[in-house]
Amino acid sequence: MKLEATDRTPAISLTQDPLKLSISGESFPEDVSAFYGDIISAINQLASTAKGKLDVEMAMVYINSSSIKAMYRIFEGLDAYRQAGNEVQVTWKAEADDDIMQELGEDFKDRFQALSFSVEQHG
Amino acid sequence: MDLSQAISLRNSLRNNHVIMAYNGTVSDDLMVTLADLLKERLVANDDVKRSKLIFAVFMEGVQNLIWHGKEHAENMGMILITENNKEITIMCGNRIEKDKTQGLKDRLAQIEGADKDTIRQLYREGMSHASEHEGPGSGLGLLEIARRSTQPISFTFVDVDDISVDFILAATI
Image 1 (cartoon, rainbow over the protein chains, first blue to last red):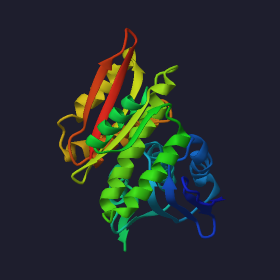
Image 2 (image 1 turned 45 degrees about the vertical axis):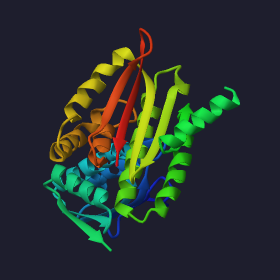
Image 3 (image 1 turned 60 degrees about the vertical axis):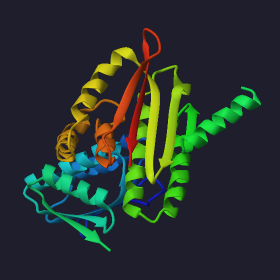
C-alpha cells in the first residue's frame, strides 16, 4: 500500500518485504475516517497477513486532533500485531525545532508502553 | 452599513490590532485558505517554534467551528486574530444549541486553571478515549488549544434566545 503526500495528507507506505510502515507529512484531511480507513484495516489484518519484525517510522509535520484519533487506532493495531508475538519497533521522528511533534511522540509512547518506541529529533 | 460606519469598523479593527477578521459560514475550504494566509504571515516571523504553536491553535479553533456549529446557523462563525506587542490572540466564535453546552462547559471547567502538566495528562487520557468520541472530532481540540497557548484560555457564552447561545473562545500565544 502506498499513498503520496498532499498539502494536507501524509505519505503512507506499508510494505511486506521489508515489513515496514512509514507515515510522514501533514495530516488534516477533510474526512479523517475516509482517509485513514484503509491503512487502519491493513494494519488490523497484519497479524494474519504478515509475520516477523515490523519497523514503523513516523515523521509528522503537523497533525490535527482529529487525525490523532486515527493515529491512535493505528497504534492499537500495531500493539495487536506485537501481542500476536511479533517484534514492533517504532521510530517517531520530529524536526529539531518542533516541540509539538516531539511531545506528541512522547504522548503516544506513554500510551503504548509495551511497544518498543523511540522519539528522535532531527536537525 | 454606510461609509462612515465602515470607517469606524476599520478604525476599530486597527485600534485593536486585528490582523484577520472573518464573520460568516466557516467551511473546510475557508479553513485551508486562511491557514495558508496565516502560514505565509508566520513564515516572515523567524520564530519557528512559536509559529507552529500559533498554527496548531488556529487549526483546532477553526475545526471546532466547522464541526460544532449549530444547524441552520452556518453564517454565525467568527474568527478574529489580533497581534499586539508580539502576542497573537486567536478568537473563534460560533452559535451552538443551548442544550448541548453542558458537555462543553464541563470540559472547559476541567481545563480552566489547570497547569500545563495537568493539561498534558488530560490530553493523554483523552487520546485513549478519542475513538469513542462521536463525530469527526476527537474531544482533544480544546486540550490542544489550552496546551499550545502561552496564557490560560478564556471564553464566554452569550445568550441569543431560548435555544441558542454564542460561544467564543480566546487563546493567546
